[in-house]
Length: 364
Image 1 (cartoon, one colour):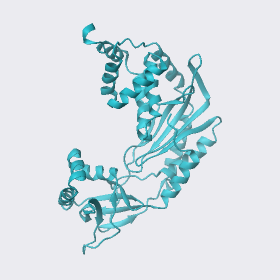
Image 2 (tube, one colour; image 1 turned 90 degrees about the vertical axis):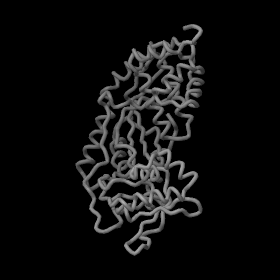
Image 3 (cartoon, helix red, strand yellow; image 1 turned 135 degrees about the vertical axis):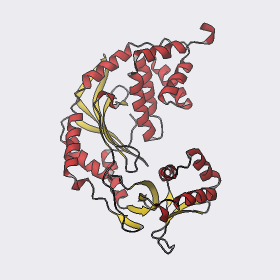
Image 4 (spheres, helix red, strand yellow; image 1 turned 60 degrees about the horizontal axis):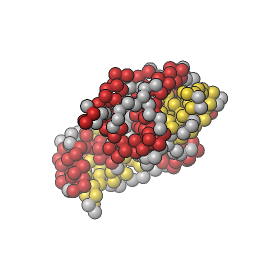
């Protein structure tokens, strides 16, 4: 598992962010993009053409959401952003002037970080952390092993030393949970099972298909804008006691590990699925195209597989999660932890297919 922030460090960073965050409700036709020093900035104008607030830089998430809202193809938007920012501003302004929808504009320290629907339900990271800590802290043997905070997500990963078993002798795994949230519309609030391999501190995030996950989308009631612009202060989940209680109960239930035995059996089955392919590079290419491993990632996973000398499906999945510790992005590391589990639990027929196609042409 990728080493991220401690729980204390996460809390401190979220408190600091809370002091420089502000949300606004804005009519889309009041927004205008301009270039300054070759970089796009976003202005929010009043009826007289003056600024309602200081102009904002846009981060990558806000750019993607603005392009998606205006239906500008992503590759064209990115090209204009890099090569012709003035052309990007012209196109954006042309489409914004034709729209009159209320948008939730989320900012952080003078930067536009998200442009969302006015039905977006704001559940901020700090609130969710404050709801999670009492539950985790009161459960015997449960501890937080890693936290992550990125431009788009917050992660809290905890494991239970009381739920531990061996896949094979000497290879112990603990059960845990991963809590994920996004303040900028990139994912729902989720609680997913986590498998933590003690021998190498690899982590696997378990998919939701076992019925073990909890998911709550950020969709709420429509926010009304009185005029073209106003600051918006979310009431927060502290005013929604029902949600807090439901979330905490779901967290308690998830960490009990009702499916731990079933998950262990899946891991043990993967130790019996031997890699028979003669061309491991080709095997990684085929698997990568299905499970979303980039070419450079395939090479790194192969190196970890060869180093482990565990030529089974279990070994391959662990090579993916071992590589997750090496990547710089906590977002990508968590995605790879999920890829490792999906790879390990793929249907037998699919695994046999991968083994069969990864044969050199001369041997076919």
